[in-house]
Length: 120
Image 1: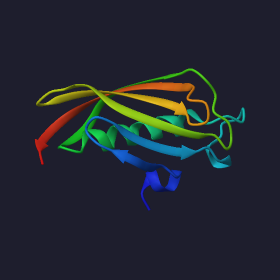
Image 2: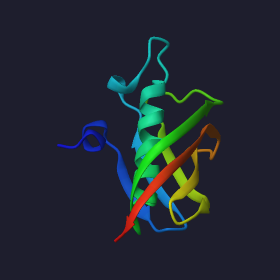
Image 3: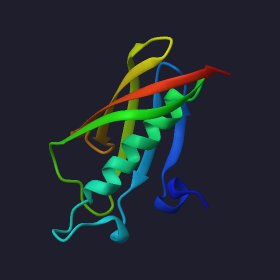
Image 4: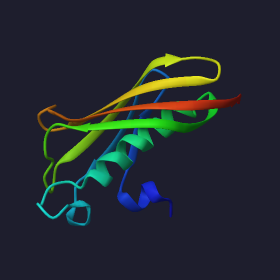
């Protein structure tokens, strides 16, 4: 079982223009305050980055940044929406918004840059 599958991450949509990955926050994904653990949010965003950046090239992350805005609670379904900011021959940068599915509130914002190795 992959790490993403173990966390319950599901790829709902995958294209070079938009990739959407979801997870429902369960008990195992909570921090000491009873909200979604930052590691779960990072993993969700990182999975969306990995999927979108590897659709037309082999890519590995070289830099990421994650800002947290709102708490997510048990039972919340979260969506990571990845879109390209700039895609070049050897580097690409993507924006990943993590939103609560029920009310579309922005929970966190992730930016990731990847090194593109070779075209598939």
